[in-house]
Length: 280
Image (cartoon, rainbow, N blue to C red; front, side, top):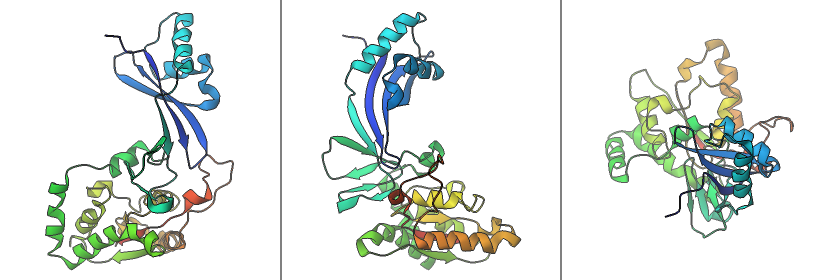
């Protein structure tokens, strides 16, 4: 049985939102754990540049530089095992042939390139919005929400969010208002569990800046966007922040940024289409 190569040219990857391309290499770290390096294509065919990146990621390379570069050249010359495309945003693809979630892509076609969720999702966002549990366990949630008009409204809104594009509708919002400790956040968590978040601590909140929330909304395209705890806003700043946020969501796009910014994105991926749910 052949031993696994120490360095594997795993994939060619393209980021649809930025038109950037990468080569992915897999390797073993010094402690024996598996590692992955995603190297921009302009550097991915230079053995010395690849070696620098692998060493930075604690790859278990031969101490002899020539031997290490030889392994890397062999990996570079080999064909990548797969081709991948990171979608520009969550939600429906053109033609309704695939639906992008924060953790996976539900696809109906065989493609040369495997579709993946947006690349700009941070590890924390992926963790918060990742799918978990089972459908059988989740079925308890609508049973419990059936005892609450608010629970059924918010749960229905969560399932309605993917229909906005089909119906040709823009974003709109629901404001849940009431005294504290009356179950608003619990119902918000129940609604958000349809697409990811299953705990109150994982919900986006007004503690995030007004600039960060539209960026997060972009990753809730065609899925519900819950925002918890309006009460956490400073009273003097509340009106202006709420106004700016609600207009951005209702208008349906994230604000433009200078093209030189590392956060600049294509127009199509800046579009926001969601049902946002605020609790106050």
